[in-house]
Image (cartoon, rainbow, N blue to C red; front, side, top):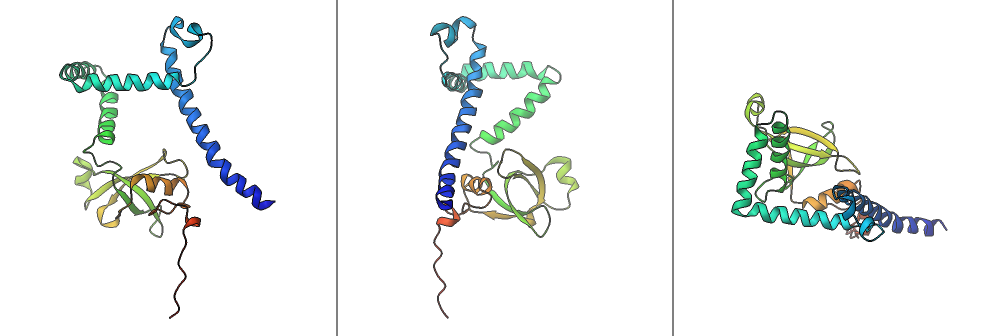
Length: 211
């Protein structure tokens, strides 16, 4: 009975969590429908709500925005809009900061979150997995006694929260592991093998040969 119960839990927990996450994403994106006039919402047109319609509209808006921004006219309009925001106090600092982060994360040439590292954290007797986000520059780099790297240390099992650290380059170990595999390793609290991406319990270790 205990074995059946544990097997059922192992099967249902990933499925339930996946459904919950997808439902949360859909419900959040469906809130974009509130931007439409009441007369254009599905409840008014069809008499009932259509789950996922907000997701479709969001994807279409993103694609159209990207298509417009990719051509010459769109780039000019984007530049004019950014120049306008640059002259608005408070707004310009918020927008520029967020834009720099998004450009770094989503740029194909950027190095943010493209290198998995091992660093000593939270003390010298422990190691943890981290992601390189860049390198200190300007006054911060000048105040440091040796070259450092900027790293993000995610928490477990929720990697969207974590800590930002600057670690001496001499004290990091670069890993040849894809970012998605490293994230699985972190989210699973070490249950998933960081090399193969498979659960450690499923990996058969060959027996030691007698000397």
